[in-house]
Image (cartoon, one colour):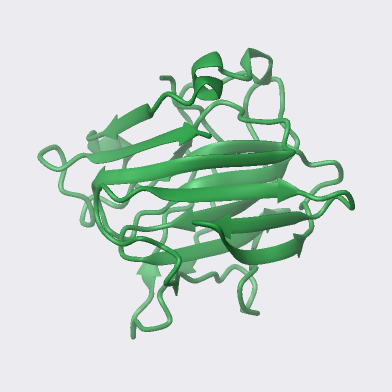
Length: 219
């Protein structure tokens, strides 16, 4: 399985659980490695429901997030995710609502993350500015929020679903529980969707002994 790259973003965003006194840094810089061309998609094995396993243990991968090849075009996409090891606040889930490009890079999108610590984040990137879609926050600030819908712990299977509605907005679910609706794509006619996996900083991860291992399968 080849990990696809996104545009490297210079802006940093601090994400934190509302129960934390200090922000927990959330990885937002995107990998500059091996972009997957849009014309290579969809990937047959992803459609089959087979698990796609991803393991990252190189310190050069720290501070980035990585994406799968295209899972769209987006109508309704549902996938099961599990994380077996890695930083507990390192997010994984979907990026969606963007326009796929021929070189595999995307710029404006919505990101739905969950963590093994039982939190989730939902925010958009448009024109280099991040916006929290759960609660109103200052520009370029987004947070992790505790949710009973997320199954905590390594190895737990969590199902995420994104639906594109008739009016072009999006509805998001975690394990069958609706967590957002009427989300607008950052760009007109944005219908791309891919799986996404974060790698924490060198101080957050314990490489190479404890790699980031994230798997997903499309339902």
